[in-house]
Figure 1 (cartoon, rainbow, N blue to C red):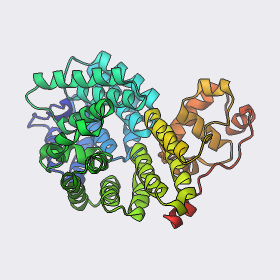
Figure 2 (tube, rainbow, N blue to C red):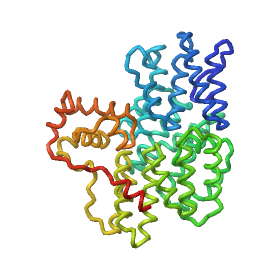
Figure 3 (cartoon, rainbow, N blue to C red):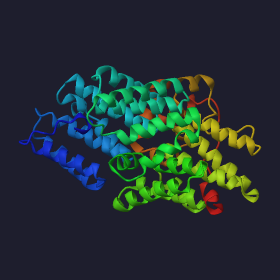
Figure 4 (cartoon, rainbow, N blue to C red):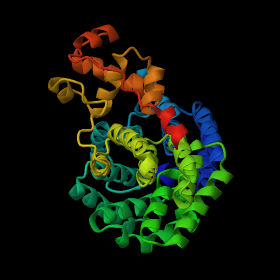
Length: 429
């Protein structure tokens, strides 16, 4: 059963609803899948002794994270009251491990790579040897390593995923596993090493639907690699698959953003690329759309300044996503445009503070000391309101302060207005 949830108890309404939800998810009926998962959570409230009590919520939170509805996923995985915690329902080590793995996935999607890696390793250490939850954990750890340019760790985790797949009769995360494997292979051997395999992942079968519906950056990544290799057929096939999923599920902006992104790449439509960047809720996907837009603009002499502005915004967004490997690539593009000393919004802090805070925490702190509300910080950094509040609590604890006023006093270096001029960028794009 997907994500290890035993929903075969025919006497349990919640179990039946979870099973139906997963079936709808498999067939890309994502709204119905979410609605049934929500109904399962409500039904499970009456059966505290049933395994579905915690696991239906885990399934709902993970589905919402896949769809980049991070606010709702976070409310499920990080409840305000201890007795509402997922592992409080049955007290089992297995549930606690799965909750850690779900939180690891949420943290990775929100851009907190450090927390994601810590939770992923913690969850895997307590979980069993293999299974869908362990596969998700390995996928997240491989993604964290890839963003940090730690290719040895990324390769080790993808190899473990492949080994586990050989032992399983079915892998509900097969599409995402294949995409991660291709990303690692591309990092080692370039686009030529992966293009022959892309066509199998964009044929809109079960595996294709699984990865394209769950990872909004996948379709643009496939299109970008196919175009680089000169394979227009595969690029258009990937774009068509993304558009079909978006049409089938108009309620979810992550799918609309992916369709816009692929359209912009194939048609070199700068407006579509900008709208994709605005629509993407996924930090890494948003950064890649901005990079694609900046790269296209850099080829137009009269738009060089705008290309620099967009690429700088892309580099800041990659940094917020913890993607230092991608950040290095964008910095190289900026150097080719004559920009030698790009200063990101996270640079104006003391060394001591940088050592205590993660990159995302530094970003939140720097904007908070400018007087921004949590909602304004969330909009600025493309995070959810709840994620900002979560980071702010950690910032207060690490810097031993109790309020925003104290935080501003602690901040040693004056900070100017670093908000990107997106309106100017949009009008020029």
